[in-house]
Image 1 (cartoon, rainbow, N blue to C red):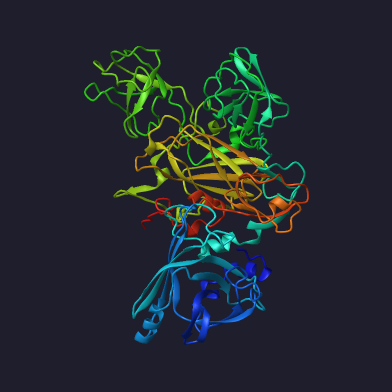
Image 2: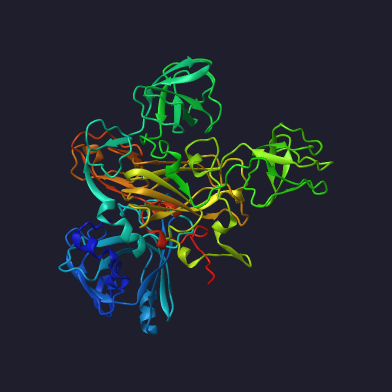
Length: 638
């Protein structure tokens, strides 16, 4: 199931009219057809028919595989694919037109049970095609047939014994409307860059295949069961690992003969306070470091792949800008409403549990000047006050006089580099103008792929950087509707001409780093992140807690498949296929192989797809994704 010839690749962007399907149906006995007496029916949905070649797979006889053949036109099409489970046969419904009662009677007498079908896609515009210039989209057996005077309906399932390559190889997004073998995804899947031959290098194991030819990923190979030493550093666990390359908030997990105290085998922990040769641990980003109690024995570590220097962290405040920011309130005059216990302040921009102190002439009872209190926002223009985080709102009995408040956070864009504060946008107009419940955008902001969409945050890296991996963290302890949902990435050489890099959807959970992959990112000095949508209609100001960027990349081949050549050196690997779980520079991590590859073993690796919105965007196929609820829709009022 592959097409790697140059003509097919040239045709990948051709209109659908440039493709047709051919059907080979292998009957149990000869029948009389409009095309003569035969036991193999070869038809196509292309009007006028097609001269092509027979399949090069079973059940075509070995002596005729790849032979020239004529495919007669008959109105026929695939209608339904059910391919969610890989442990049962995939289902396919085929519909063909009918013409006469005699024809219907003749077909009804055919023994259709377990009759083999082979369906292939063929380009009609390739000059001098060969038998390889096709894509096998189905090979299976007829389960049942229904014959009427109007149509024939075949229900088929994959024959797992004769179909060496099962499609789809990866589970589909349950709502993606583009099923396997449809043109939109075939054009992506069978690009030459997504299906390549490679040669094994030294050091491969049954689950890690190494090759110098795996240049699509540039991220360092992760640590896998690497021996480490655990010690006590001022009461905290210290993990010693020379030149580990990990940075803060990278994920690591441990195993061992005896586990160190306070660590659980197989649980992911976050790197904290890393130096060149050691690091500490926290259970969550920014949490208290894990205390030391015992060193354990035979301890090993497995990590996420290190991606090297953080591009955002070393930037100065002036190099991190935003469409608008929300600054610090200092001695801001307020009036306390003792009836509603609300403090009204237009566009206050504060979030749940932000810290404030009161000042003034006379404090509102029971407030004590100089004591820290916590904010509970009530919409964008009012808030209540709590004595403890997530506590009960304070009931004001007096309003006080000349009351002011100050908060402790400065929500400028530069705060995404640290956890002192975070970026908030400053005004509602960043969303546009609210017209009867719709946010009306200006003409300058029209269109999804528009770097002028606000709110946005921008980074000046000082020189051109290829930012292939972004790690974004939204603010913790916020309601779901307050969190960022859909963002867009743009790059520019001059902060004036922008290139669209893709859409990404963030999960409805704050405080956790979330990786966004841009494997074909441009090399550019300026990068911009535009916030396109929140997880609900409520408008709040909190944006991002942290944003990281790295030039290392990973997982180009993830969700795909590795297949060793039929004549590869290691006999036990010949023709063996396994799923690829992850990929890094020089390494594929795959399902266990029957033997470890040796240097010189050859294989083909095919890029897969988990059928998610973000995966479709990583492959620059965003406009073809059809999964509800993730479509990047918008309504623009003019």
